Amino acid sequence: MNDVVELACELISRPSVTPEDAGCQRLLAKRLQAAGFACEHLRLGEVDNLWATYGSGAPVLVLLGHTDVVPSGPLEAWTSDPFRPEVRDGVLYGRGAADMKGSVAAFVVAAEQFVAAHPDHPGTLAVLLTSDEEGDAIDGVRHVAQIFRERGQRIDWCITGEPSSTAKLGDLLRVGRRGSLSAKLRVKGVQGHVAYPEKARNPIHLAAPALAELAARHWDDGYESFPPTSLQISNITAGTGAGNVIPGELQVMFNLRYNPHWDAARLEAEITALLDRHALDFELHWHRSGEPFYTPEGRLRSVAREVLAGFAGVPPQESTGGGTSDARFIAPLGAQCIEVGPVNASIHQVDENVRVDELRALPDLYRQLIGKLLA
Image (tube, rainbow, N blue to C red; front, top):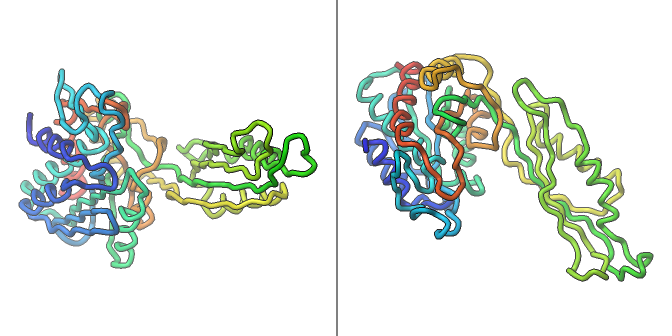
């Protein structure tokens, strides 16, 4: 094992289930301080955040990651303990190996190597870590971005280490993400006996036409490299459990993944108007996870394309797919954002893993990106 594998194992061995950091950031800050970085610990609510910088002025390049992981699930389902990293047949297993303690370890090693080779580089190299990416994402990068906005902190480029590759390291470059908007809908009715429907108001029957319209709606045809906006109903609950009782209310959960044709406010207004049109008695609670972002063609994309092609052997696919990442909070600060990381096939799964040879290559990949932007 080399330095990045050892560091990744140290991080995996800390059970930092969101929003816990379990000492990961203290460990990383100690290394970064030894390399000359100024480190600021931002404890916000129950969340740990680390802001480490080297150099000064523009341009500002941020390496963005998270130290928290999702729960392991049943331990007996794992081949080995999820928080005792183990290498088998050239593969490192453990919770967070791919998402994203491997990338975080590679960030730190790459940053150490870069500033050692270029102590007087122009601009600022920064590392931003949070323990609240896999959870509510309230007091993590979302909150830090608000602090940066108040401080006037400039960010020109942001590289997020989310596992983006599909089959081999460097085969995909993520240049944007869809927005995510979730809703909890409560439709009110009047409970009653199924034999006397005239004495009740069935909220399932009342809401069904509106839900059918929502599910069938064509929102748009996509936006540049973004797929069309999608609404998915994820949960419907109603009733007492008895087959002879008309329910008194219906609860529905749904989510929209949307492209830059829309913003959250417009979508909320459209859906509220649709429900009003169906004359429903309802309550609607929204959660705005983040707006879509997109990095147009420019220096960051061209540099990343060149570097990734050297690792994958072919130019990377440039994509805006997938879920969400913390880059959604950095992009509104005016930063160009990309995501580059290891293969994502096992993330959030039992026996999460990353190939050791690809993990060993990650620091060089990030170091090349940093060098072409700041050296």
